[in-house]
Image 1 (cartoon, rainbow, N blue to C red):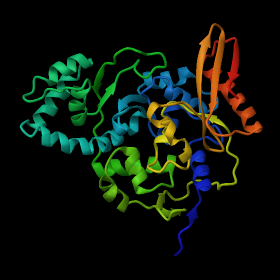
Image 2 (image 1 turned 30 degrees about the vertical axis):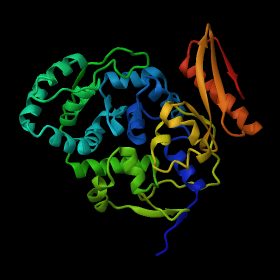
Image 3 (image 1 turned 90 degrees about the horizontal axis):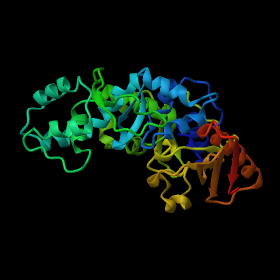
Image 4 (image 1 turned 90 degrees about the vertical axis):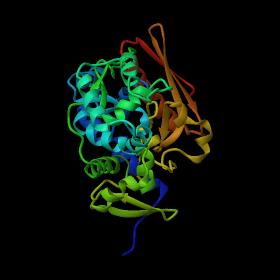
Amino acid sequence: MSVTTLTRGDLTAALAARQMLIARARLAPAEAIRRLTPLQGQHAPAPYIALAARLDGFARPDLEAAIAARQVVKTTVMRSTLHLAAADEYPAYAQLARSTRMRAWRKRYAHLDERAVTAELRRWLRTPRSNAEIRARVERYEGVRPVEPWGAIDFIRTLLPLVQLPPAGYWNDRRRPLLTVYPRRLPGLVTAARTVVRRYLGAFGPASRRDIATWAGIAQRELAEALAGMRLVAYRDAAGVELLDLPGQPLPGAGVELPVRLLAHWDQPLLAYADRERILPAALREHDLTIVGATTVTVDGRVAGRWEARREGERAIVTVTPLVDIGRAARAAIREEARRTALFCEPDARSVSVVGT
């Protein structure tokens, strides 16, 4: 049986469709995050900007209410970075993310009784703790002297699923968070991997095994058993690489119109692949956009520039910096989308200016 080959344009359109970047959806924040996979939360406003690009009628208090209700949690998961995750599926991400770290923990701390340490720390964390308290507690264990600032938290979150308590995750929150153990049990590794793979392919597929592992921050072998038991369909890209997908997912094709969007800091589609060509042209890699966490502008589904917002008195200003040649029609669309984004970031601004296009 022949395998369908998908062009770069096909893959760009599929990504835009699944990321709600063709038509904005009307969804509650927790459900949107569930479908999109956990949103990068290194920069506090980033998940809000990401949802504003994708949801119709979304406002900041909507996500803050979901965090307060514990429908969404702020925590460290993929690639050891902060994310906002749908609370009911966070245990699957936590289990998969810890799989590689757990082997290193057991090797480094072979002299410790893992079960006893885990039980002790679970009891101790019934009271929410600060980073300073966690460091002092962890250093009481023999041979544990974390050097890096977050080493003590890493020690614990390898054993237990740590989450930050509200108001961590709020748009304006800048305080050091209190941490506690998420109360739900973690699923088995294979079950967790299947949940995460389903969510990943629903949000970013079709994609290669390498893409999935790179995004999750794990080795491909961690996925082998899970993938073997899943009902998937296969495609190939123009280079002949096998791409996996869930059955029945949207593949709108390269001819679909892809509107301009302003994406957030470290927006997930830019981090979702080992080969990022479907959203990040090779010519732009020199700008290190995914390293510095630049806010980006997409034209025809791919990064074409970057943007920044600032406030001057009662005026919100968005500066757009094109990184490729952009046509007149796309520039007009960028200005319209920039105004929308500016008013989301600065809802009480009396006026908006867009410069650079």
